[in-house]
Image (tube, rainbow, N blue to C red):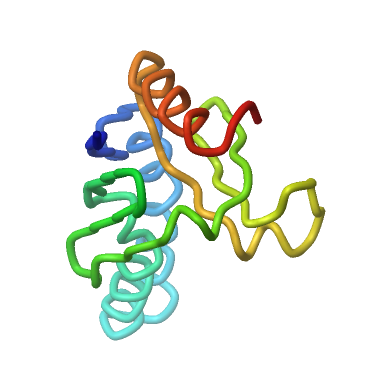
Length: 135
């Protein structure tokens, strides 16, 4: 059995509006203060920094592996044996390599699976419960 879904962060209109409310005045200031070069330089680096916000991510989980594919990057493949537990959050599911919570290291070694719909989140969580047990 496998589960597949895609996450499109750009569908959230409030976040897009907030993004442009913050970025456009900054770009206007960069053009005013530094000229065309600094405007282009700023657009380039802001685009790099916010790239993930504008592309969809495809997720696939089967009994052995987790696959994450994003446009513009190499597909990532994780063995599910690497993860020991999972946590359900408002925006998705976090897979952790530790059995117990660790404040610092866990943030850098786990994987967050973005899931938009609650029904999809429940489906993924029930699939992970079969693999890891209750978490």
